[in-house]
Length: 266
Length: 307
Image (cartoon, rainbow over all chains, first blue to last red; front, side, top):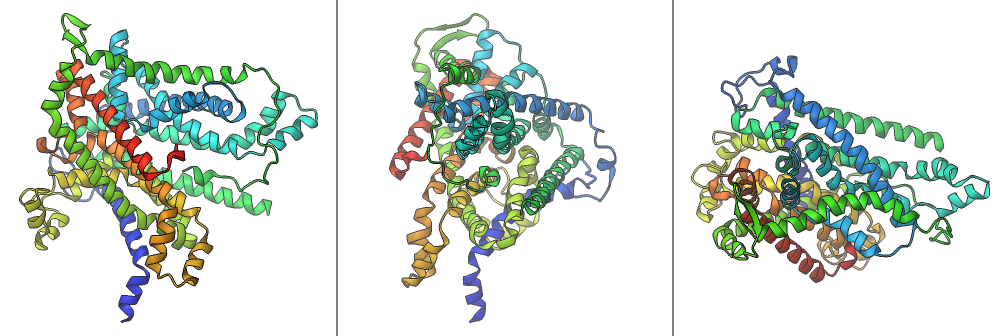
């Protein structure tokens, strides 16, 4: 029975592709429904094809404002977490010091904690201090939970770095600052970039921690959450589709760039 | 994700610790700002939360620490169904993630060939569309009049799941099945990526050796591949279970009042009812329960060097 043998041989591939389909199905639905013209307030049922939402992506009150707020927060959270995280990563890899174990667990714990616990406890702190909730409290929270991910990404890269490269630079009379800027930093850059990219994605998409610490400020995920109660405008799907496309194109572009660079080296 | 940026292995360095005699305070200066941030905005809040959980009072008169531990007892006895549900749903989603994610990770690691990078991108790319938008899409997919529910009805699957209590009547939305489906979907990439990382490290010659020793493909998998992928299985299950147990988004968007998880309770207590001591106690119990489970799990699976 060749069909059975073929199935047996390709069972893993079929299973894997089915899972991939499960992962991508919602994105397909989001894209298709960005061309919908819903009858009621909710965009859950297909009615008819239309370009209306794509022609007027900011046609919904407050949505683009929340989008730009989310981008600003994600940008500053990325900057803050990347700088602080990179410093910690260098200290952990390059130096011996006391209390290394506790430092490591302080960095690991935020990644192993359910978001709702961090969110709730941070809110108790802000309430106790009487801090006004808004842009700054969101930013503080985002830097806090992005930090650990940057440390992990940068640490992996710096650990795999050959220390002889820096020694060589120093042998060639480079000062500490010059060695760092000309040798260390360029080698660590891909790790720092990976950490920064991850921070941006995590911060931009965060809902649970933001929901607790935002007060009346509305970020884009909070706008989507609110719209699930009030009525989902088609424009949400337009933004979702556009983000997906931009992400795929950026990754493809960077891959092509990387391939070309590798070929030039070879 | 780290693997995507890993450099080609450099020549082994003879001495890992460079003899650096720069100031002995340098590491502390480097650590100070970041660690201060974590201490003030992560560790200190935990202490505040612990103290809030044993306070009594009201919003108007203010709260005082009275060591009122009964809050814990009251919270547990009132909300144990939600706790239980969180653990059950998260466990179900974790098992499903493992079952669904393993073939995909295996496919990327061993069978994808030149398609590997493309499939990797397709696994990661959905992250860039807000997960709330993607979760809302499940409302369309699982809609009462949609093709999925229609097919499940025609195949009498819904009769079985209704009998098991996973769905109710002809509906999938607003049932436990929909919530577990959403949880599985949302945390699947967190299972696939660590699995892929540990599968990719396996030396292909080990598979050949097993085949040479007359192991059937399934035996090779059971005795060679799976044991070697254990680090990925452990970190994947942790990365799925922990966020799933604390999640309230899926239960809120895809579930009903009968599928409320502990996250929903904490959120409501904190943001709507404003009963801070109860909310803090619940959150503290959740944290303690998860830390306990994770510790036992890591001990039992024998990969303590994981973290």
